[in-house]
Image 1 (tube, rainbow, N blue to C red):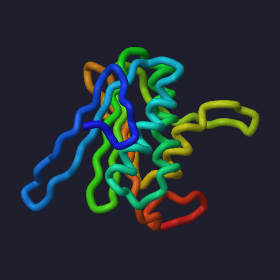
Image 2 (cartoon, rainbow, N blue to C red):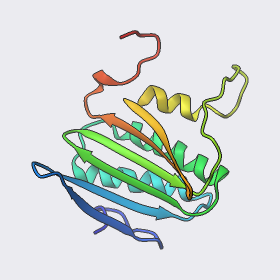
Image 3 (cartoon, helix red, strand yellow):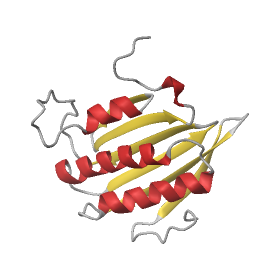
Length: 158
């Protein structure tokens, strides 16, 4: 089933439920062809999925983070890009998988740099994020909560 308002892409869409006994968690995924249009397709797909699920958090933050990760996958990895989302109790988990085998690292940038800030932004927007490597590529994932009090905030301490 496609999200409401989404016309799909040639790779299709997969919806499933993970049964944890006491709860069922919706999981939705799609595969994108790495083209210059991929980040825009991902943004529309993510927004439509969040609306379909009735997520109460800031959709723009999720869309921005996914756009960054899909752009990185498109530029640095090549091959299909697998985008997966799940949601439970207002907590959102998102993964972008690509075929790249390179290391994912945050760069130290000067004020004049025109790119390379995606992971810094992801660190500020998300509750947590990470990388899962495997022989056939990597997953860059992040978590967001509809409640904004548990995010990383620059200049604050726990």
